[in-house]
Length: 368
Image (cartoon, rainbow, N blue to C red):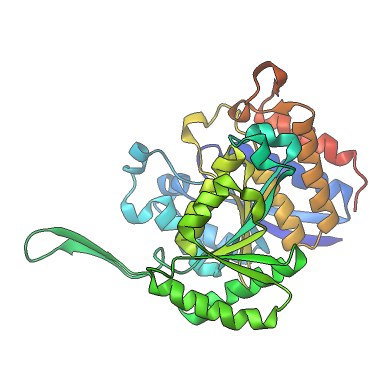
């Protein structure tokens, strides 16, 4: 029997609620397949800080180090509650960025998927959505402004200032472009390169490296698009895209915009891939205002499990089965209150009930 070790970081806010549904599905997958998942739970984020004084404590690091992959829930607090934590220990700075740096998870995959049958979730008109939205954003995840040198202080005139440096080298750029071309080859052989070379030198270098890399992928068509134009087309013509690649901050902003296009970040799972270890997480935040109410949809967390099955464990058929099961629950008219859009036409159920129905649909499909 094959065994995979998974570090489970439930995180903050709604994290424990939706992570419980992911664990439920992992146990269903074990029963359907000749496989075992060894799960080790660990504190991460604000809850870790309040219990240990560190948002990424040494015990959690040890658990993550020995795991094959990491399954992570959302982290963070409300703006006011975040003030209770020192700036350097706030979950994003003290936990998330250090984890990305430690495991060099340089490529963030965020699928943007909404079939026509679920078009009611989106604020876009049906004629814009057409037969459905299906593209993926690949975001460079360990470079750029988020990881560059930072300095703040007071200058000689008494004015407060901040310096933040956008840093990239050609190796960082090349490897995320390589993985993007490879994915484009498997899909529609179309790559949108998002940049801002009319202003930023970093984008000039990015585009130079892309021209070198594309020589090895002559079957892939490349379209250059400025980041501001990309933001516009995502709203006006999202079906034009298939694979999009971009630097760190552009990817952060545009992928969140895609959550708005779909109708919720709760419909966006993600994978953060490194050379030796990857972690999987919902793209959304911890939604502290609805935490503990069992009304948050676990779709993004379960979708992250599906991505983990395919990308880390090679369980392609079971990953597709899980996607199909989740879509089937929505198509049957069920949803959680946080995603409800159609009033009486929807049957509102709890987080755990949604997970139960996904498990039922999954078990109705032939195992891999």
